[in-house]
Length: 183
Image (tube, rainbow, N blue to C red; front, side, top):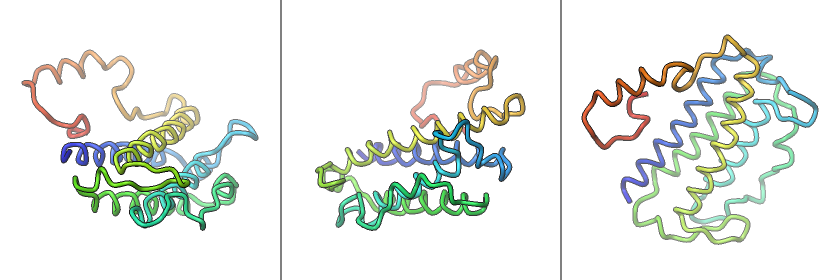
């Protein structure tokens, strides 16, 4: 289970990195681009992730993961105005998550915590967020790719590079490591 905690840490770091690399490619104006009136822009997605992260990871073992102070509906209001404000929320959310995650031990994994009065083991709660955050980071990356079009810098294996990438990977002996170790 130590491997589980290390792997989870690396997975969360990976999705944070994808968001970091996406937003680094975008101008302030582009963070607020919306496909249509019903869609979310990157700034709004970050605001929602921030609210969720603070709610879920603050006082993780002692209070419900859906905090009374959270105003989820307001997370989808377009009221952020600068790239700096977006990045502050982005970093605060991830810092809260990692601060708590770094305190969780193998002995904690079977403990029960609650989200909206529904019991979860710590493993279940972590897995829930490990599904939720990549869902939104994927949206963020997709919006970035739409905006940048041909100027997009690939965040993974670039189109047409799979054969070269795989050749390099298979040139090494079998080993145990996380796929993000060489990013």
